[in-house]
Length: 168
Image 1 (cartoon, rainbow, N blue to C red):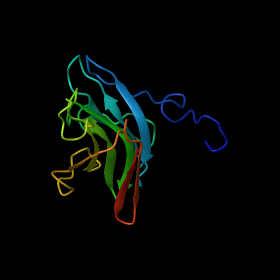
Image 2 (image 1 turned 90 degrees about the vertical axis):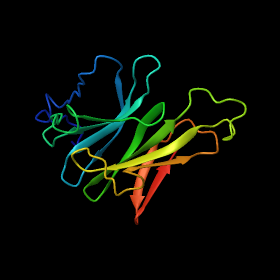
Image 3 (image 1 turned 90 degrees about the horizontal axis):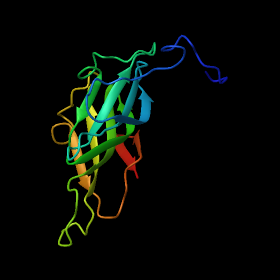
């Protein structure tokens, strides 16, 4: 609450544990946002087994503090794009969910790389509240822009006046 007290009726004793049923890898959640209808969305990254791509992850929690397992597949939407994709920002465009982060396509960049040794891209996707990609956004619901300057990851997303702003 605003007074600093834990609302014990939310979730279980004021806590929500988002549990995945994946047998390999782990999920890290890095940002959250609340939709106009009160659902809580969490975004982050799921690592995979050795030499497998890391995937962007989105989870949804109800207003009562229950992990919504009807969202996506078993309560998660996993997005694979390149070798590493992690979501670090979330915002809402009306009822649609917009996530942003960074993606890396190649594990090692050769000295002959045309991108100057940097293969990090800004990545954004727009989804419907049920987790399906909104294919009217960018290219089939996803957008990617190569960053030509060194960057570790992207960390924020704001929507203002019809534009999406991503920081890193």
